[in-house]
Image 1 (cartoon, rainbow, N blue to C red):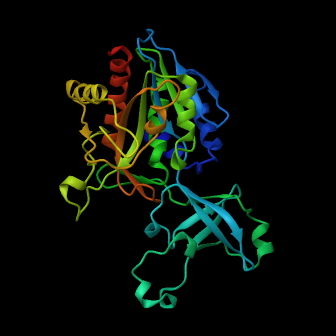
Image 2: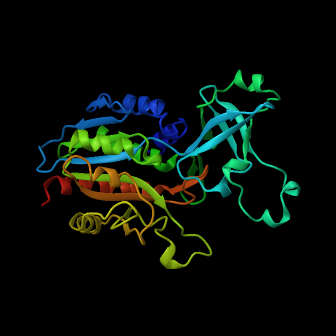
Image 3: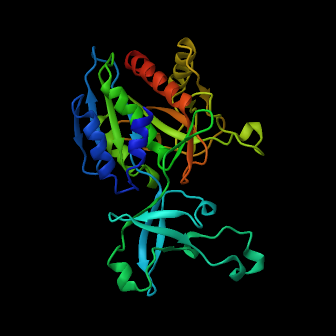
Length: 340
């Protein structure tokens, strides 16, 4: 599982530019299911189970990652850019990046601190105050390497550290994609649908169109979600805890989840001795927000792996949570297939 996650995280795929991720996923699943690629680039797969299902269940994970896009090249060879997805201003300055298909190395550059007004030094710089230094001194030199519209990716390797932790860019949501690949490669009890979707970080358009295509009865968003289980955060604001299993959502900023299915997910975890936890608080959103409103509507479920430092170059997951999430998803594929 971790090898597959590492492989997928190493691929660059900012929203709207996920085709390389899709190609790697197709290579993993092509011999295990039927699939097609939608006009938006979603990989929609159908896995034949041992038995037909009472309910049409679709599991979803998004292929895209947060990043940047080049908007202008200055006369002295620096790149101006815009943000793709929700990235905190505080995690940008000085970070290494790669630009475009040529994988041009760069640094997110800013003014030296002594040139910033003293009363503004404690305020995080906006991306509008930054540029990308790719080591060029003229516009012409830079234009030979990159173009306006090129995506820009955090340059951050996959690292295993501490007591079963992993760090990488794009764990949101390549880890979820890896879980679905492994489900497709296994024998499932019931017929099941899967959508590897595009553009979640900019509004979830891929998932909405995938759900419109499949028209599931139950739509399960497999995600990573913000964990604030670090020093200085009060217990009621920690959202979820690494090492306590997948977080099951009852509500977020985009979805009120199906109450019966939420309770079924919690009870299924308990009955199978799988660690799981409720997602504490109403924060964020995911592809469920679009899937549950598509076509005639679907009953939404959210299952997320706790992730520290989400939407940065250093997302952190814990191995035991990944394993527990996979085990729970397999059990839920059976429970949801036949539930009322």
